[in-house]
Image 1 (tube, rainbow, N blue to C red):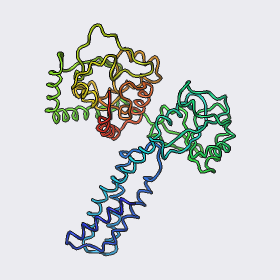
Image 2: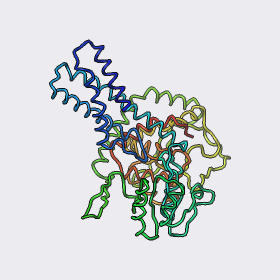
Image 3: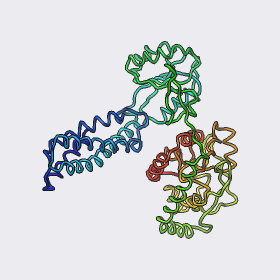
Image 4: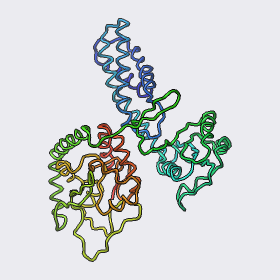
Length: 449
């Protein structure tokens, strides 16, 4: 509302200074309730767990346009003839800039406060086992979702997390039928129902108790691995059925994606060619060795290809000890002895060493967006250790990916990467690719090894 009010004030000032006929400017104030109503009707004020500005941008922009058209219709219907179109156009221009900017500021401030454990809600979890521990670990690792786990309820014997882990700190508060007591004890504001082998007949009553106390409730669905953002709820009588849409990596949509990838990669290479050539010269002068190096990586359908990078390190000493990554972590970043050159350190920090992979995109080995490719020896290991890891090879590997823009770069959890990558495949859309590319531009300013 504040952004809309400022937009109206600026539009009025613009109209006055233009020295052209304009309707009574107080009519423009109708834009404020109109845009609030339109945004409310389109659920743009609904609280969400993972609020991202890019997810809301198109809805906010179109809501301002709809409100401006409604205002123009009202002015025309009332017979106002003093160039209402020109005044409403000025208002629409101001609103199209200020309202998205205001929402961006709000989202950024809110996420930063939540990352510092402010504006988070105490949350109870019903469930037991690995899925419950996984849900709690996600809440702790990502406080920007606004959830702080304060207790677990389960009819089963409580299973602790790994010794020393954060999930081990969340207390067990009793059985499911003690939910009301737990709410009073913790002042909980949210409830998440995960998997449990206990008495399922108690769960609907638990939801009603939570709602009676004003808690928001979420349920982790069975087969959550295949349920994405495009899933819909249908009904047979009063029974809900959850539809599971299918993403076909062999379909025409992905063929169109691969064609557009090559066109975009060619345009990007042409645009940055002076910069690209400068990096080539700097690498060549930094230390003896080739400008590029091609490392074997596994792509779509398990095919091995040479993934290109700018050489960022001096050639290895044959006496150096071979690096072994930590168990459960992906290889990457600085492995073993730091052999990076000066320009190599800069390129690795800003991910500029990945730019030659645009040539891989032109050759058809990779896409602009997709799961990051891994070395064959690690793929064999991870497929044996990590659940659903091999499913990421349904699509072409990417220069950037959904996992990377969510902070999983360098030596981070390979299980988490596989989870994000499979989410990307199941929920793929052209807009998701565009969003990842935009987030990549922001991610390169964050320090990486």
